[in-house]
Length: 280
Image (cartoon, rainbow, N blue to C red):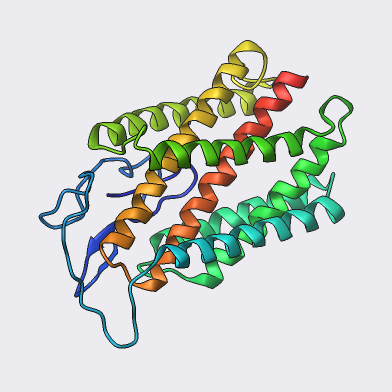
């Protein structure tokens, strides 16, 4: 299935020439990313048990394992943390540099999304720049009198969401089905459209736009953002599970790491904004 997150598009696994690779299709939640199309020629990606399939690998490749995904996700998240440390210590309050790092991270993320194969350099570059952006903005927010300690609370909240969704997915409390995917697609499109409209009103009308980032409406919007991020995590877990079951090549573990990282970044940012509204 094509698994996605609300920030960047990613590819779903599909059978290629002798192994399960990633589709080359791209497009964020504002495009066709959550269409729920079946990338497995003739297989059901939403079945509880993966269909039997024995891929053929060249001597230079081997199937992706869960250990590969864990190792590369750890490396990518470690790079985000290193970048965040630099941003927090040296760029706090320098919003121009923070925004520049965020825009550069966005560009690298989209470039990776449109590439047919994962590029570790692009993925780690994205992670480093995204970390600088988050660190600088988090440091700025932490220095505000009413919001001191909010970034640490957001980190703990993000970890709690990850653990809760992992448990819910492994115990099959949450099942990623075609209906689940369509629901997330509709919710994501609505959320991003409202966010865009609110941003336009903020730019041209001033203030808080339509009020989606303050007060009671802001709290509701923040909760929806965190819940959407949690649902994207479930889709990421399904993508990884299917990739391992279908024998995707080892290099595809970088794409799994990229997807999990961008989803966790989304959850952290929504969590931070929600905590900021609650404590203001």
